[in-house]
Length: 328
Ligand code: BTN
Image (cartoon, helix red, strand yellow):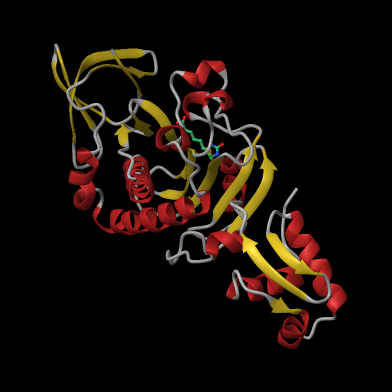
């Protein structure tokens, strides 16, 4: 089910937000929009049902006191400084997978930067066929449609761009140190706080579009994670010991990812290479890398300018572009 506000509610909300914390009389609201008081009262009811805290007396005056931390397009866009990312937003209370929905949208021509968010996913997709646990209202489960003019081989660098943007956004908002576990995980204290899943539609020599799926564990507490994840996963709330504003984080992430992405389209990873290396979780660690049926063991030494992982193995140095890494 798709959620959206009625136009009247949007207008009333807009007016209340402009007067956040102080009363607006029905007379004032009426004169701004020429709406009958009964419609204003209906809009207020609707807004309250969405979680907006509004005080006042019906047909007299209203005051907005709190905005819910829900991922409504209207709230995401309020104060969003990115130009392309999030210009078009599809927001759902619950859905299978934002990546799947995004893929269909992209196949039907949705523009670059289209954002799909869901409060809950019932079939959230992780890498390598895993399920991504996406409980309601506690995380950010989102996908972005990207249309870079690059060959498919270069697309994996986007995972590092998204990872870096997420690490920087989390750090700016919370002060927490996030490291990137090549190629697609964001970790705090060695536990997974975010994951990135890129899905591609491509010809041999060029990408048609990329769906960048990003999952961020934000306000879960320990018991919100299923037993099999409890040891490996964490959330910002667990690490920071306080509730984190998802809207603020989402906006910050979109801004940072857009900046890095636009640069990546022109110059590849060169300009962010050092920052990516500064967040390199695997540096110096002994690892096991699964590449289909092949297993490679060695020491993670570097990430090169194309985003490849450099491993020192018994047989010499190896450059790896994808795979599943375990620290041993
Ligand atoms: C991983 O680490 O395995 C990648 C996880 C990616 C999860 C996100 S949540 C939003 C988007 N929609 C999906 O179905 N998956 C991605």
